Length: 150
Image (cartoon, rainbow, N blue to C red):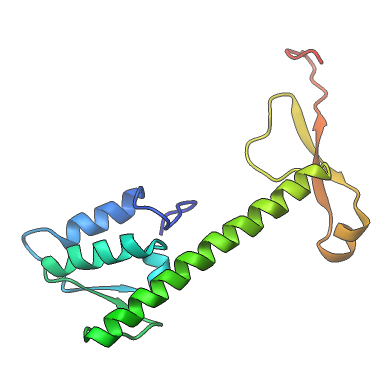
């Protein structure tokens, strides 16, 4: 597992290392066991590409929660599941982006590295306090030797 890495593409260092090792000539293993196909790859085309690449090297991809064998009907079912996983991932991304934009519109901080010259403070939002606890806002930092002038 790679912290912060998305399974939407294959630009994941540990993922690439695993695939390269699985495809080595010395055939270190016959099966890659995953929790579910969407945790391996959330792009239907990419999933199929890697399943076929692994199969060429004699390695099967097996999901612990989505038990599908290799007959044509089950292959088609895996492809349908992959398309649904991809759709759900894109929908989730859309909703998260909308929520983050609304959070920022209300003046709250969404996270990431703090901008230079700012600190975090607890924001006051009645709805947030009632449901989620408190949310944070950016606040100008009081610097002993100010480098930044506002």
